[in-house]
Length: 264
Image (cartoon, rainbow, N blue to C red; front, side, top):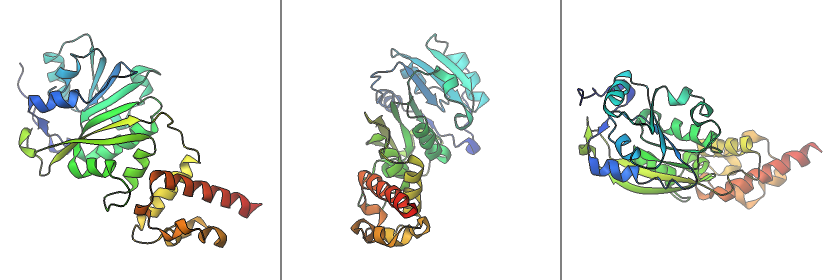
């Protein structure tokens, strides 16, 4: 075994060193309907070693050249491709062509939400997404309406994926230990992962609504130039955190219809 990789603060690295938890995270993938797995931020391969035991093709992607060298020396495996690259800048069709793949990882906390948004953009290829986040971010992604932590991330993720909070991981099993608890979640893509409304407008409605989350939608969505008639609808008397994902979809449909009739 070559010398351990030094965790780098600027890359948000906290290396998991508990084998049981690593195996448990590896087992969160169902591998149903796909054979390819992308691991983001493998570090010293504590999770990688459990993934390559499975019947799947793994790409382990890391920005850290020291981690890449360590993985190449310690995990020669025909099912494993090791790639030095930045996930956020990578064209994901370069990885497995048009084939579906799951995303998994002990994600760097500083870019974890960006990773989720990129997975959502590429959801046609990503049927499953599992991994470790800062606990409160994992909870926010999985939260339902009616709670304070329910927000933009919850709605935009749950519009396309069923989100499930799996378990909590304490700081002591990492080197160096983070200052907060971590949480592992699983996202499984819905059977129908297209929206029955304009997706760009949906995102705009969700983001604009939550930017002033204490206000009613009648006030927070003023910038969308809605007709007075539409604003009489009872849904506009609610605050964004009170709306379920399906209600946000129906709100977007109403706004679309309103724009058409206003311009007729």
